[in-house]
Image 1 (cartoon, rainbow, N blue to C red):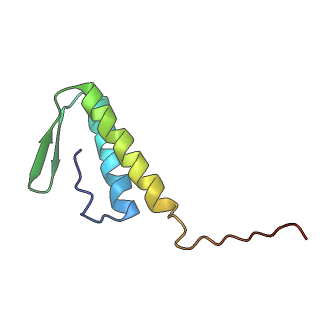
Image 2 (image 1 turned 90 degrees about the vertical axis):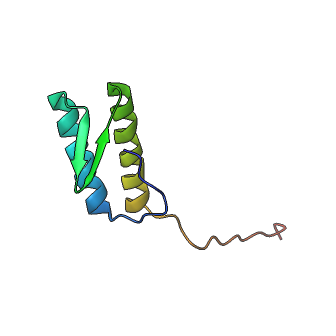
Length: 77
């Protein structure tokens, strides 16, 4: 599923998309209808790549990066 990075989706929505894609892949279906948009995959490998991409997005949404990093150094005295 080719999701634009500029489009913000909640973690729950990403999980819903991933679960739907996994279910359709297990059923052997290569197309997915989401609202008015229809996505058709050319191969099982393309569907697997979409699932991996969604899982990475879910992980990033679950574990946001820290906004501030502080360093502390000394000469050892």
